[in-house]
Length: 205
Image (cartoon, rainbow, N blue to C red; front, top):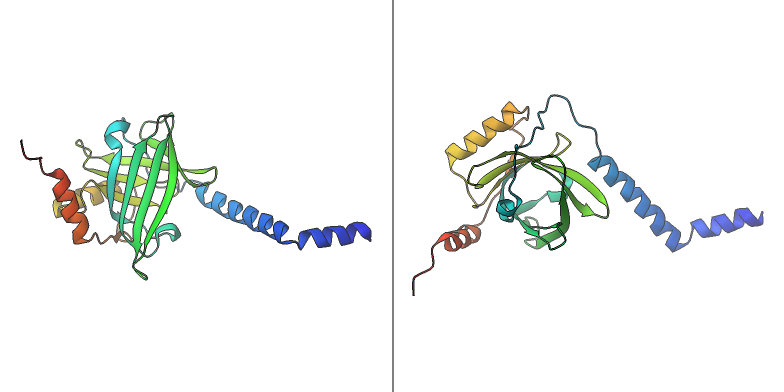
């Protein structure tokens, strides 16, 4: 009776409740990030990836809908190489419902497979970040995950030409992805103007 009462009391403490909630969340996130690969999708990554050139800001042009970025517009991600060899990842976007900015900070590390990184935004749970296609000048990238539920089109500029977009969509379809579910992300004029200013050469003095 004493032991039963002890465990009943312990399990009903706020601390234990938080532990159980944390374990539940960890299990759910782990099940998402470690979901088995789906058949019919070619996840072959680019044969080589120059990490230094890949660093910097990328604008989200399109993505599959998923809970982590739901309702976000004007999404952009910054990658920065750290002295310890890890990669800092900062993802930000505007919640279309409230107009407020949301920021997620994560980390990434390289793998033995060229074009594949491991990215984490939560504790020690890492997910595959596959660079499926990449412009020769690193101006755009097609990114997938281990699950076929994730797909992104990224660009160094807030907008891509129609011709370039069609080319990327064709590449995604050739790899087995359906492109009709892609959500095309609104990038505000502010981002367009900022990117234009950054690309302009500085005046000589």
